[in-house]
Image (cartoon, rainbow over all chains, first blue to last red):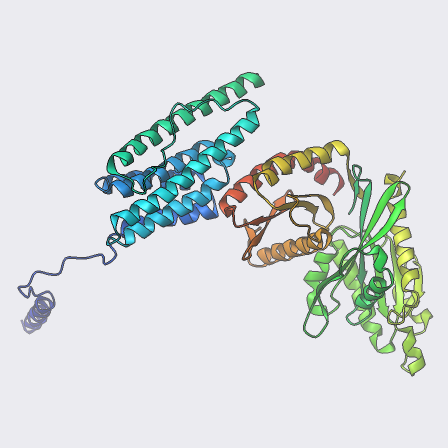
Length: 212
Length: 201
Length: 136
């Protein structure tokens, strides 16, 4: 009897102690906040970009593309960030399709586009004009890369470069990149990469046929 | 392992100067470097400690010139002699084509010479090579110290300790003064090239 | 004992190194054996290095690092790369007897270089493997 009463005392003391410990103090708890919430979505992408800089594996490229897809959904309301992600996605696809045949400048462009994107997302107070300037810089660089790729392909094939069905995103004469221009650029980018992929498939088929 | 480049008509051979620490291996190369500047297109590479002891190796590429239509390039290396650098010595011995064993002529270094030679044989064995088949010569160095009254080993003693089994050419020398440095080098080059002579024909 | 490479073999090796590496922006590439002998070397014409000393040191360096790997229980390291402010140097083993050394600037990412080197090594292995087996 005494034993069980001691046990009871222990149990109740314990329960009291636990109650104290977990007492609701009446105030709703602070919601768990990520202080760097805006940049958190990019943290994963950053890891992948850094790892690609170090070693280009098919897994890393797949993770990269998957992460871009995720981020596109998250940022679909933000036209400028979407454009950056579009460029990154296109570069990722190009790397995936071409691997070691990719133009060496692809990787430095990937890094700089990511760096600009990181800048924009970590300074939400950045002015729209400033953001568009950064985007324009990267689009210009992207265009230059595309030209280099075309030139190299032409040199490899010793044939005139077939006219690309889609024009590269045009550089606006005015300093401002407007929303309709952005939308058009997205569409043109998509069409460009579709045609590049088709051209590559044709080339591969030719090579396979020739080797038979 | 000597490399014969049939495209450029170039033969590269590796000769390693081996021996106990402070025995005069680096001094040999330094003398050769000074004497044959016109045949040496680059600086001598030395990887040394602060105390001026060889840490990794000394390296000197030496152009013999045209022989039988081939350019002969000799890569001269020394190894670090200190006992603790055995792993490094083994590394430097990789692909060796000819060896100069630089023995220290001072009486007090008798045992270190023997140990160093034994060490050479062990390290060669790790590459399935042997002094029985490799071209090599001996240099009995520091003979200039005799005049300073320092007890030196007589040649017979050195020969008995180090050159008993199928005797090889030996050269009493003074690397510091240059005595027999060139003669040693000439001999080892001749023996080494002779051992790969079929490629020259 | 020695080994030989003829004009045809060396031409083929040089073609591979030029098209895979030099034409993709690598500044200098040299193929050496573990003794420090230079099999071949190519550069983009910009800078001339003392390749004989580099080759001797590269072979020594690689050998030293391989020995360290064994001591810590690794068969070998998968990456040997030194990063400089402007110039970098990368080492890659081709079979047990040969090394491919590349010198490149910061305009090429390490990841890309490793990919190109791996590809080159695949092409070169076929040319060099018989040599390793027979002679060495």
